[in-house]
Image (cartoon, rainbow, N blue to C red):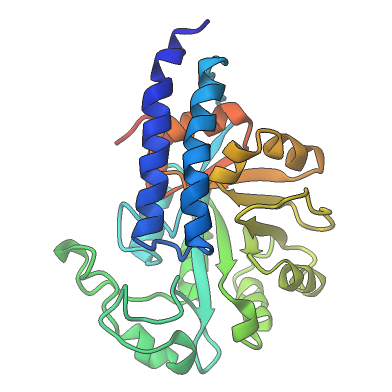
Length: 295
């Protein structure tokens, strides 16, 4: 048996603590919190058992997907964060997009501006002129005070000059009529239809956007897909990481269905190594350098 087995207790403990911490602080807006808290115990035990009986081997082919630009490196969903993700060597850099009241796609995870900026109100009720004047960096650190909320066009223009692929998560598309048209217009303006992956939790919206934009790669986000969904035109399946622990066959079934498989959001190196062994293609992290052993 491999010497790696000595890491099993640490892995299980870190997994459990990491998950409960994420749920308790509300990061990412996890649904069904009470259920997920209970399942976290099973997840930690399952990790421990699998690692005790299996050697853990890293796969060089697994790649980093830098979360919210690079949320541990710079203020999330800013150009500074996107640049940090690119500079970390991430193959994919993920951002979140919502639509302003005047129809401009801007980078913002939450429906409201309150958590990450010095502004107030909902993105969909504010104009681009209002949003662009906000400070999106001061709450992260003094170093980034004055960092603005970028529009999608600004980020597309930057990414075009890099080797990274931009992952655009469309948040709650049903709340933003016209967001698909606005998104496609921006992609065409910068010639980026083949340099992005558009993803959402709303699989129906993704299917519709795929018909509108046949040249754009598509992905769907899941907390837990109880069955491997029909792939259709969707290439990527990104799943909340405990699902892979609770269901050891999930990554295999998704890959067999033809998906490129990602795990989100992984925040310690032990879990990252575990998911590399599980066979996922990409790991979504706030600190993408973690895959190379960087702190």
